[in-house]
Image (cartoon, protein in one colour):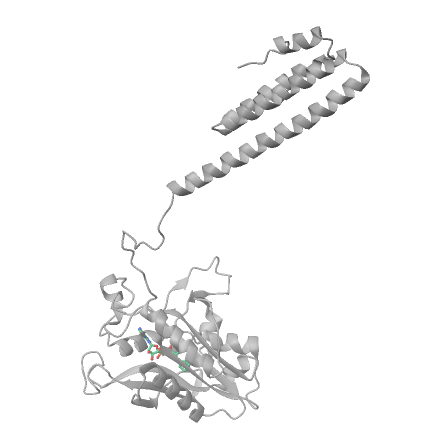
Length: 370
Ligand code: FA5
């Protein structure tokens, strides 16, 4: 419903000699009342915007009325100007309040419709995974060594021939290289003297650690290693080792045995029979093989232990002076032990897994058991 600004009432006012300003005041009040009512009835933000334009817009009702202000005296102009500003402000406030009211009710509506019960059990069953048994045991090993003051180091799987062999007292002509055949990376050119290979053991971390940290030193370096190997129940071409190194003044084999025993007791939660026998590794002197009593046959002999009753677990020994020198450590002042055991073998023994190849073949029926 529009406003007739020259309504019957106003014409009567003029007839009775009432001032133009009074008429305009009446008209302003009419706009004010009509606009408030219209705002109240708005159901949407679009409605509110329409009313804003209709009443307060440049071509809206208030502007149209104010065009008549030219007919008033200066005092009347002032009076009407002030009043119209006050009404405009008030109406703008009403419009804004309505916008806020509609917005919040639409949010509430949305919340009502989108309400979810977060305590309701899931309709689709989601399986929760877990870490691989190799990772579980490696973490346990790391914790045990950290508790004995060792730091945990990480080394490259793509290793230089120098760190994998030469720095470990295994020159290119040495027969020990044959025992650890591996995959070499193609050199860019024949002139390129830097040969790279998939590391055959974690022992390259010995010289890397010595060069970086010097002596005294306690470190372990767990990781994946690779060998060109015919596989069987106890041998894989890709497996995991943990390299251990302890260098200080007056370190002896007794320290090595104590550390090994602590590790095994913690992992197996019981005493395990361990056998030390002489072993040859060019980077230790003297060198040993550490065997564990076979858990599959209780040391009686089975196909897994090759009917010996023992499973080879680790190589170990006192670090060779040449290796200490390659690591920048004075062999006259310091001595140390090193070991490298198969994490994969440890997992087999801990969980009674009778074929090493099960660990990396990705069969979930197997992995779900851990
Ligand atoms: C070495 O790799 C030496 N770097 C260990 C060492 C370190 C000796 C420091 C002295 C001082 P070896 O080849 O014996 O040694 O391997 C060490 C251990 O890795 C073995 O005792 C065994 O537990 C594991 N291992 C070796 N070959 C395989 C394989 N093919 N599959 C799974 N585990 C293996």
